Length: 238
Image (cartoon, rainbow, N blue to C red; front, side, top):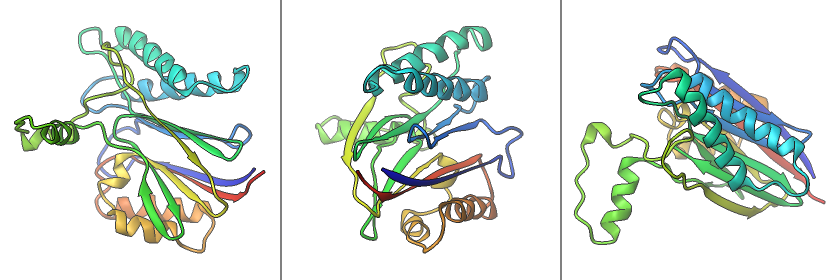
């Protein structure tokens, strides 16, 4: 399998620190994003811990890595780290990561970072934000009466580092030559509409030029948060 990739992370124009972390190991075909939960101490440490656990687990795995198990290991590691940084409130991070193996994208997701796929000019979001708003929509679909405070609609309902049992979203997607994938933090998705993202991802340009332009555009529109993106092109399959 032949992949091309690039990654960029930027502090933005408002934040005092960059609490995003990224995964990009071309030898392992391993890519992803972790975004430390704002409002809690240790966001950067939580994101770094999650990324390190995933990378080490995939690198040392015997046989095919178990994405659910590895993500739960990251959750436990971040939770333990939280006892030191914030014993009363804990720490947390999003974690969205993918492993490209034998013509398949294996994807694991917790939080509101995202993974997009571009195929045939059509953009599809492969992940669902674990937010108060989306949970309310799901419960309304079941007939429940749910009211959401507008100020809290984007608050996370799941994150890596939580003390309660964690549910991990998993997806296996067959790859096709010409596919393009984009892992990103919400510093990009809150500033750039999906219709625009499709245009960026469809450009006749190298991965680094595309991801650099996306991050720069988020900053030009205010740079309200850290912005991180990882672009992966599928050039050839086995």
